[in-house]
Amino acid sequence: MECGIVGLPGAGKTTLFNALTGSSIDALPGATKPNIGVAHIPDPRLGVIASFIPTKKIINATIQFVDIPGVPVGSEPSKLNSFLSHVRKVDATCLVIRCFDDGTPPDSAGDIDKMETELILADMVVAESAMDKAKRTARTGDAEGKARVAVLEKVIETLDNGQPIRAVTDWSDTDRGILKSYGMITAKPVLYVANIGEDDIAGDCQAAEKVKAHAQAVGSEAVALCAKLEAELAELDDTDRNEMLESMGLSEPAIGPMARAVYALLGLASFYTAGEKEVRAWTIRAGSTAPEAAGSVHSDIQRGFIRAECYNIADLEQHKTEKAIREAGKYRSEGKNYRMQDGDVVHFLFNV
Ligand SMILES: Nc1nc2c(ncn2[C@@H]2O[C@H](COP(=O)(O)OP(=O)(O)OP(=O)(O)O)[C@@H](O)[C@H]2O)c(=O)[nH]1
Ligand SMILES: [Mg+2]
Image 1 (spheres, protein in one colour):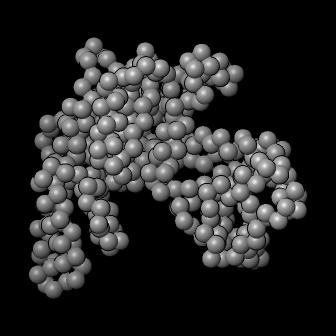
Image 2 (cartoon, rainbow, N blue to C red; image 1 turned 90 degrees about the horizontal axis):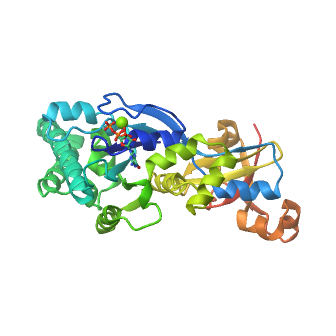
Image 3 (cartoon, helix red, strand yellow; image 1 turned 180 degrees about the horizontal axis):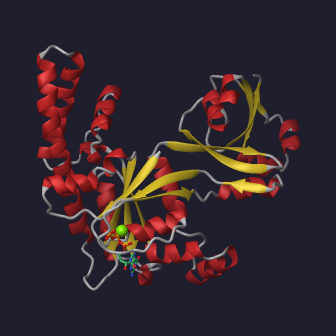
């Protein structure tokens, strides 16, 4: 699972990427190569579990991020596409909107419009050339070719109306597969990131409000953060970071909620394993079964799955120890059809 960071040049993408991944890539303008890195998903629940189950190590879930060079607005479609080829591969996008003053006052609504127009145009180029090909295949009576033509007709109509493909919500699973095969950018889920100035952290920032209003109007999520401050925070050790956060009146770095929003955007969820060796968050697709979850730990555990013994973090907070959870009858034994629930702490029993 991978999330692309996109936006206009100078919106703060590389700065945000550094904050998320703990990298220190020079935020130089005009970069042409993408940066790839892994972000640890801050998760307060891990600390909660470890406060009851003493452990040597805490391991966070991760997401891969790709920092994509700024889209040069108004370029030739072919140049645009070489920039955007990286975005076609990711599973979701974060659209960074400049809401800080870099000498020019921010125009967040205008920038969203510019970006979306570019992306719609880029998808149109792909859709039209794909349509020619799909029509040729469909003419031979090929069923898949026909399915592609039907999807592309709807895509082109939507883009023609100036709408992103994600505005269409009634795709079948097959349709979604087809969209994915073309890497349609505007079909990918999007999180709007309003990149505010350091003076705006506490106050209300007009530019950020516009980003939030837009996100709400199109049924997406938005977060506001100051990428520059977040990148500085990411470089500090825990003590200094907490001091800085406190002085700003914040309880955690804003990349925490942001990373969790991306996690949800990607359709991911976490379950936990806990023991004296490690307390760890594991990533699964939301709605995965117990054996699928076991497979994310190790394929052997999925293959030899017997059952999952689990409880919820809330049970741990209430009863304090696994023994007490057992005694309270809250320690569940779940079989292979069990769908993992948010906040499950699990021991897998298996036999290979
Ligand atoms: N004041 C302020 N400046 C920021 C913030 N985020 C980024 N910047 C500055 O804006 C400039 C551009 O930031 P980058 O992170 O390089 O922007 P980018 O979107 O990666 O730019 P390209 O890769 O060229 O498209 C840098 O000088 C950053 O220090 C912010 O939150 N506040
Ligand atoms: Mg950059």
